[in-house]
Image 1 (spheres, rainbow, N blue to C red):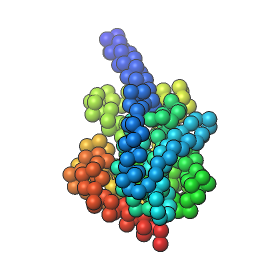
Image 2 (cartoon, one colour; image 1 turned 180 degrees about the vertical axis):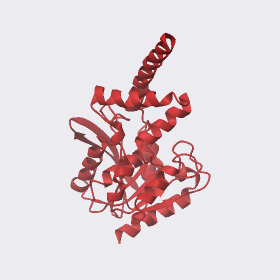
Image 3 (cartoon, helix red, strand yellow; image 1 turned 90 degrees about the vertical axis):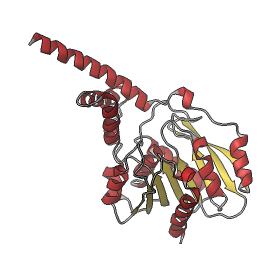
Image 4 (cartoon, one colour; image 1 turned 135 degrees about the vertical axis):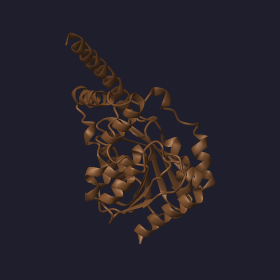
Length: 296
């Protein structure tokens, strides 16, 4: 009995320690990942599309959030807000921005809080970032005078976007590539892959408990699937069955939760969030058709 008690005690300590490490890794982006390319890179993309580039900054709860804004030389089809994935920055969406601005859309590519040049050390997978997205929509309306708003998100950015759509109906149409349906599900799956079953369960629970106690954030509430039935905005989900990062089952569950407003495109053989890179013409065609249909 004593031996069992000792083993259980050791497992509890190890689980708690691993949970704390997991939690801190989840809510903080490594500083080494927070970099941007030289400014002449996005400026070159803008020039090639006959557009101009400007800097933008807003503040939410005192946190500075920064973005690039691509302004078309002609045409005014509305503004598209783009949200990148975890550990990425606005530089990862330069190609997407060039694609849309050449077709007359103003494009806003912010760094999410805790990413790139934006402030805020804590990242919460949509719990706080929803307010940031709504602030950028205010900026698009008030500063850019955009009367039609659209959005595109990738991976974690797509999940944040879906959570925002449940509380802000100003977006006419959205594109969400490879979102997670529930953060808890993807956290358990990834931890299980790394640690194995059954020891991953107490580690994940320890991580969730730690974030609640340490930061007052319940990451189990980062749950696009829970709010998706309330959405009344046309959403194009893009998710390849070949995605090894976030399984396509996440988007399938989202589609099933609200088939009236969600459309799911499953391109074959595409790596995580690489549809635009691997089949750019088809990606461009489908995204533009989705936005243009909502503009009529």
